[in-house]
Amino acid sequence: MLVLLIIFMITAPMLQQGLDIDLPVASSGEPQPSEENEIVLTVKRDGLIYLNQTAYALDALREKLRAIYANRTRKDLYLRADASVPYGVVVQVMDAVKQAGIVKLGMITQPLAEEQ
Image (tube, rainbow, N blue to C red; front, side, top):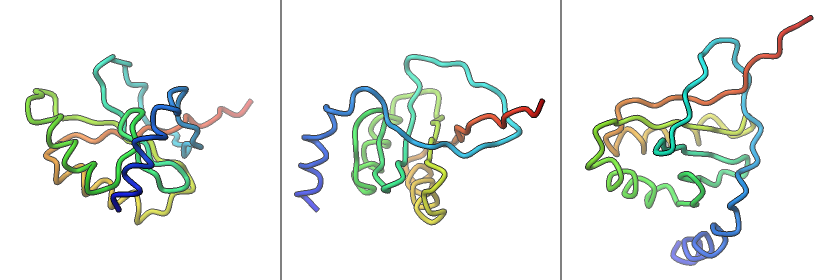
């Protein structure tokens, strides 16, 4: 487990361009304003979990979220999960978010393409 954490810590800075995921499509929802201090949790198709641009194991993520949100007045977070990620993995991540005390979880999806 420690070896994986070290690997994540070494490779995470190399992933600064953004995380390539295939978002699920949804016909409902409203665009959210982009704020510099918003926190985005990403689950890639291979199951790796990123908090903004830094990779975390599930247990370490829970503790990091607790530390971040301990002093924040806004207790919200946005979740981007690849469409091919198994439902069980997404549920585990959502559970970790809830255990960290985050009360509002927004799901980021891709808008449904309008037919012409």
